[in-house]
Length: 298
Image 1 (cartoon, rainbow, N blue to C red):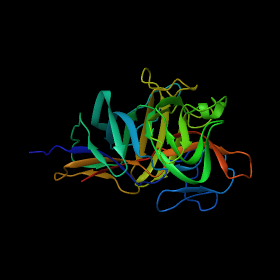
Image 2 (image 1 turned 90 degrees about the horizontal axis):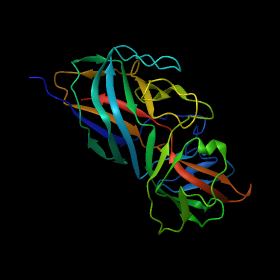
Image 3 (image 1 turned 120 degrees about the vertical axis):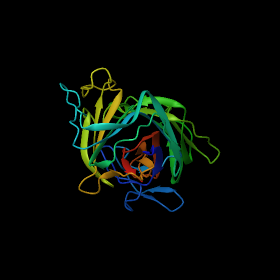
């Protein structure tokens, strides 16, 4: 009898899925450095909120996850994606929320066992929302943008905003998305709606991650087309190529399928040095960092 796969999601250390707003991470040893205790030190001005780190909790919503024998066709602004070579592992029309802490795992529902075989590609259809809960310590003085409280800690607040808000300016004073102060602050969940990868950019990749490379496209569920404006996407369509690294093999003995989300860059700061040359930093938000994923079967 064919065994059914237990399908789990984990939050673990993976390779990086970088975009123009998050090319760095908090371990370059020059501008930003994170020590073994997770404390970050800044040493100068840095544009674009490109210091990324592990959040305390990370929430995504998955609609579909599949394995493919040949490469799916990415969507465009005029044609939807083609996944005719793929078989579903997860199919949740209403979506299922995956809420993970670093190092944790959860079992996903609506799972189907693919046929035995070797799969060189996979894709995920997910909501373009990321729930981030984080509290981070710094050696620098961090100030709630612009005239809020200061301290060596910053944490997320219960709020929602579009990622493109980081590009258009006009920030609210004080920010409603994050707060800085002393050790006693309590983190809420900040939900970031990823509506652009950078200014007027709605596709990205391929970018190398552990186990292959990955692409991502911001689309709408209504037509499956790549969006052309901010605040219009409601899905991310991401394709992972496993070859030439290692295909996912479903064997007769396989009992577990795992999708891992990268923890080491899952959160990032919207911040700047103020005034230039000082050690005080203005923090507007702790939002989502570069997205990365990895699929495997055992």
